[in-house]
Amino acid sequence: MIRQILLGGTAAVLVAGSASALTMNVTGDNRAVEANAFAGDDGDMQLGPAPASNIYDEQVNASASANNQLLTQNLGSGGGGGGFFGAVANAGAGQFSEIGALSISGSGFAEASGNHGDIPDFSDADGSGGGGGLSFDGFAADAQSVLDVLFSIDEAAAFDLSGFLAAGNELSDGPIGNDISNAASAVLVNTDTDTAAFKTKVSNDSTILDESGVLAAGNYRFTVRADASVQGFGDNSCIGCGSFTVAPIDVRGYATSAGYRGVALELSAIDKPIPEPVTTTLAAMGLGALVLRTSRRRHS
Image (cartoon, rainbow, N blue to C red):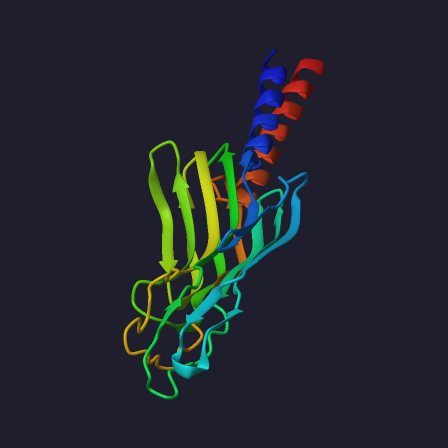
């Protein structure tokens, strides 16, 4: 009986020298790309398919165009006339991401642009008066690239977060009242306690991600996203309906983008306080010696 107890003790000491394995379970996968474009009465909406595997590799593009009608009536001795100058809108988004055994990584982008079209300069050349009207359609475009994964871990884990976020305007030319926006963000939140382990967002700026820490066992949500949008409002007002003089009208254009590159969340097991290898070995040898000694006494 004593021999069996000592053998059991030896096995327990040896088992104590090994650490348990960290496990990450994916509980939700909401990765997506989307692009929308509208110009006048024309519109285009594109949404990427839902993830079908750990690797997500998708890209979408949307475009729209409209005929903006320029009406001129009784322009002095020049008579009347008209033309079509179309507003346009374009949007695109893409993402390549992967979910590993203990990691979530990816890169993505979102971009949007549009303009009111080519509206030329015209005027009452002979000064005899007259009237006219100017009508041009509005436009809007937006795009999103979202890396959004929910997961759980069965024990406390160390995390390392790395990568690069950027968002900014490539072009912004137009009157007040039009809109342009961009943003890139990364958030790691404990959904059990609704507390953020990490959170950052940039607009018209960029940042390097370099963060580490410890996550308690539980449920988490990791979200990285890029958003870009532009909007140009239409104008159906009558310009110079009395003495007709029209100043040059420039093309009103807007373009912006946002993205994340090489973003990676990596988890690793935390070293636990276990007996040092030498101590464990000596303890096992000592117990083994006692087992042998007890066995010899019983046979002598």
